[in-house]
Length: 273
Image (cartoon, rainbow, N blue to C red; front, side, top):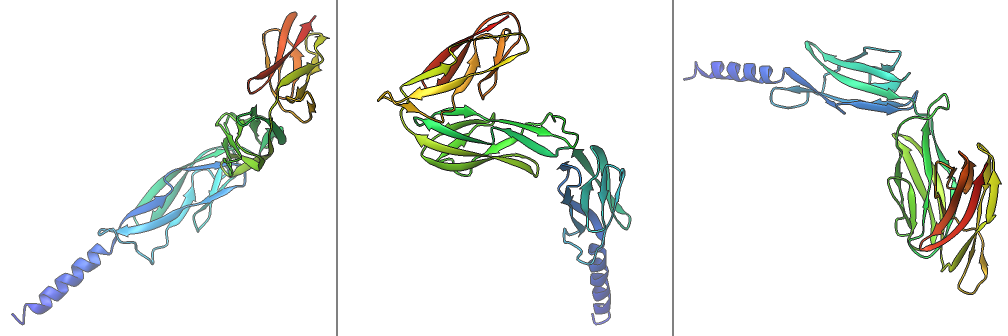
């Protein structure tokens, strides 16, 4: 039996050596999406043995299939250089794996308006526009993600519609990847009994614009300043209107420009020649 003991020890050492050999490469994340040129993301890499244990002394190498789109350094940091797709290869010994990289050129998010006063009863709504633009100042077909850090003051939908909840101030955030923009919202809760749209009637030519303003009145008949109402056109083929009340003539005809604040509404007439 004493003669067999060295054999068992040798066998155990051999099995331990085999199990500590690299068997696979784990990478996180499995896919990389970078929004914005010169922005980066680091890959987390582990070389795993047959028992699923990480080999601490392992140092993998990184290469990019298209360095003009995305580069990668020795620490695994991927940096976007141009819009497009590339593959990053991670190698260790005879093992290798690839991670797809997609770069979208997003430089900024244009938010309009950058700040609003939301005056009216709780539940008053107003749409905010958020458009992503690239480094050439061209629109990017990506929908920013909205969030409210204080939904107890004002919430915001995925389409950018703000809804008042309680008095206060909140900064809403629109994000595309790491690119973000903000809109400050000041909420005042008070009743609004009546809305007027000024001018009551306007005439424009096709392609020209007319600014409509909203005047609100409380139950006491006193005017309320700083209202932001939701504008709509009764016929977008005749005239369109943006959230700030700028109506543009499209074709000859007559359209009704409506402003609403909760259940309270006001109207004006726009004639397009």
